[in-house]
Image (cartoon, rainbow, N blue to C red):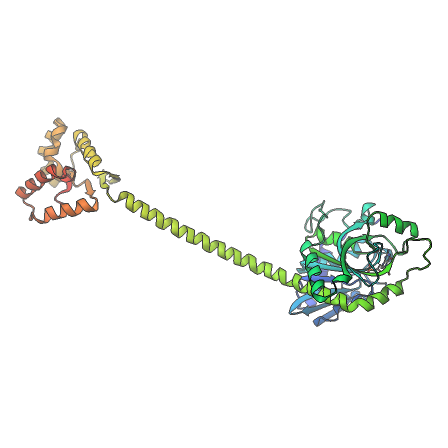
Length: 449
Ligand SMILES: O=P(O)(O)O[C@@H]1C[C@H](O)[C@@H](CO)O1
Ligand SMILES: Nc1nc2[nH]cnc2c(=O)[nH]1
């Protein structure tokens, strides 16, 4: 029927842009006032209100008790937007049009939708004047394919097949029960299932019996399409039905329902509904802001913890390396014209073995330059002809390529030894060499440097 109608993303965006350029309010909560509940906007401070007829793209409200005004205002310093009047399909609007404001609100930054309505009760425990927290709904129109989400899906708003289980926020529902207890009106409030029918006629007795059998607690002519669209685009939803009449479900019953009676109950209970709505609204607005703040705090704390863990790890690595290397001899070996360097850390006794092997196998290349030539001419022949004897003649030259750092304890010992034999004459060199061969033979190569 209406599935060919489409509203482009731009049209929602244009309306959102128009509203944001005409008000400074940036609401996090939107409220839809049901029949006779337009006064829910009365307590808002710093109001900016717009007739629907002045808002580009907005449908018009035609039902008595629906003023047709969009009111922005503040409650305890938090901005919200309130629809004084909603759109029903029975007025001739397509379902897409009836839900048009929801997507506009989403684009304006709204996070929570509070829906209210007037409804007739089927549950025996719900009397006129009672307030039903909507736990779930039956969307009779949706069940037969009349759904505002029919037609091409706008992925920018939500998925093609959105889940609807849990569409009425559990946290806000239990919050309202708590608030009702605190306000001393708990006996007026209970949870239940709302069913939407197309209207505009009220139910026949057979229809009422059917709804009752299906487990419907209250019936009305709105809300479900709005909730479907809001859930599709990720809004948190909270719903309240004001029970304005009992649905006649007995042929013996001579009473009948009418719209004036519905509005009258709305007026009588307006104060209580307003108080309850205000408290939920305050919490909904606050919890959004707090949730944002909390996630920023959480991010900061996580980064701090990460940083501390890194610092501790670095310190541990340093300490570990320090202790691991504490008793090791470090040999730095460099070779080549553009020297390549190698560092070997090992236990002193292994260092000695390593040096022994090195001495046995090391073949010196003759260096160019006058100094080197002189120093090496003699050694070169000996070393290359008999490498195993090189230990006797090369230590002095080798120390240009190999330096050894000693573990602290041994270094001290060596220092003491060297200090007691200075200056470094040929004789003292020979003594030190002999002493080191005896005492700490692995240090012989660097003894004079
Ligand atoms: O807009 P809501 O759902 O509150 O209005 C209900 C359903 C009909 O529109 C009207 C019947 O009196 O009240
Ligand atoms: N369908 C329906 N809508 C209502 N809105 C308020 N009361 C009623 C009712 O009894 N039936």
